[in-house]
Image (cartoon, rainbow, N blue to C red):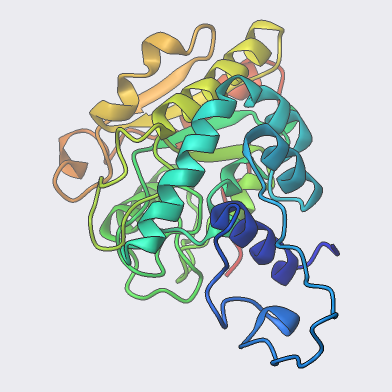
Length: 287
């Protein structure tokens, strides 16, 4: 299968569909769209259903499609069973008509950049519940989403105050990931319109495994720093080992004035990186 957006969507559909479950009609492109023509030739061989993409085997195939970096697939191998169970859970959510966010080919987007390139970890809670908002990177949204989520608006205010960056009108933070900033939610999916609905389903074990992998890199001497916003994220500080962290209140309007504004997370993280001999992050974003 070629490495195209359509191919990645089909791969995720196969992972979620499982054996004996056909993807919805019209859910793909090309040969996957619409009803099959009726054949009058009884001897015509039937097509076999696509193989299920499961767990570590699934992670390997997702790696081939560029959805997960190879070193992340290796690091997540210990939570193979959790990934299998989560695939089953998401399939059940779709079958029940509830669905989930972000789109299937973006669930593991935080793991698309190699583990070996990560130097800053930003921890979020779970995806935005608003339709079309989640893109697989914590706090980020699709470039055409308006208005921006209030938490992101406050992040942009602090960005301008801290390092003098003029915020863009969009909320796509993927340029930060190009510089080794991992925007990781503790829970990678959510039911549309129902904040926190996928907590306790197993994602916490998967992302804890990811954080442990980052700690091992830091213990081996790789420059690393973390940004922890809010009580949930700050609770991870004791698990970060040698990784220094900048902690503050959450950028939500409910708490931004209780310690987020004025916390200077961007310049302070750069100071931590420079102290470890690494280049600072350019926090500017394209217009």
